[in-house]
Length: 303
Image (cartoon, rainbow, N blue to C red; front, side, top):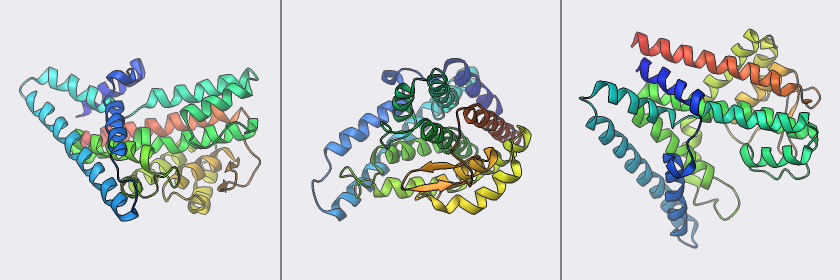
C-alpha cells in the first residue's frame, strides 16, 4: 500500500487530472445529474428520502465496481499496483488544487482583477465573485486552499488508510454528491440534506487532521504556528460548516490575516490579505500536505 500511495502521488504531480470524459468522478457527477432530474417535484420528506436513496445507490454501485476491479487483478502484482495507484490518484487532486491557486495569483500579479474574479468563481468558490475587491479575491483564494486541503487530499488518504480503495471512493462519492446537491437554495435544500449530513460526518476527523497539519506546516514554513493554533481554536465555530472553519481559521492565524466571506464569517483579527499572502499560504499548504503524506506512509509501513 505504501508503493500504491507513492505511485498515486507521482501520477498526480506529473499528470494532474484527466479530461472529464475519462474521469470517473465526472461520470459520478453525470449520474447525480440524471438522478436529480428524476427527483420528486414536491414534498420535503419525499425529497429527503429520494436524496438519501440516490447517495446510497451511488455508494453501492461505485464501491462494488472498485471491489470487483481490484479483485479481478489480485493475481497480477504489477498490474494491480498500477491500477490501484491510478484509482487512488483519481480520488484526490493535489496538482489541480495548486494549479487553480497559481492561475489566480498570476492574474492578480498581472493586475487583471476581472480574470482573477472569474477564476476564483470557476475553480474554488460557489458564491458570486463579480464584485469582489482584490483583497476579497485573495481571501477567497487562501481560505479555499485551506478548506480544500481536506476534500482534495487529507480525507481521501484518511479513508484509504482506514478502508482501502473502496473507502477512498466512498468518500469521493459522498463529497461529489454534497458539492452538487448540498445547497440551501436552488431548490436543492431537501434533496441534498442526506449528502450534506454525510459529508459533514465523513469530514469530521479529516478536517481536524488537516487543520493540525496546517499548524505544523506554519511552524515548519516560517509562518506563525502559534497564531494558527490560537485562531483555529478561537474561530473555528464561526462558519456554518462544522468542519471548514478549522482549516480556514488555522490558515488565517498562520498568516496573521483576516479571511472573510462578507455576511457569513470573519476569521482572524487583522486586515484582509494582500496578494503576497497567496505564496505564503501555498508554502504552508505544501508543508501540510507533505506532513500528511509522510504520516500516511509511516502508518502504512507500521501496519
